[in-house]
Length: 101
Image 1: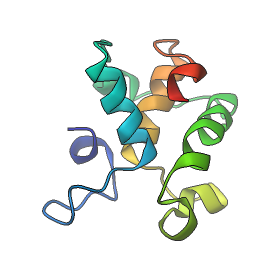
Image 2: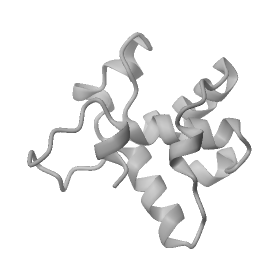
Image 3: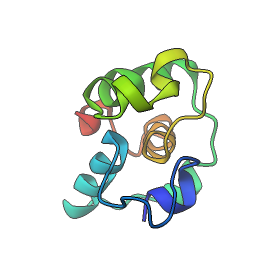
């Protein structure tokens, strides 16, 4: 649900059991009953401060960081869908940095 519409790295049918840290956090928040309007908030361009907060809380704990994540390495590549959604939600104050922990 998170990956398909928002992640440029999502490949349908290719190991759909693997989830980035961002997708896991979105899943956890939704399972806890949080109402997240991901579509609206993923369209915003988050501030640099928000991006750095999201990197600190998401990328450091993500299993894809070491080998598979170009964004975490140089910030030039596109971030994963979970990162896109959560940074938009953080920037709009829908969630807090603590929600990403």
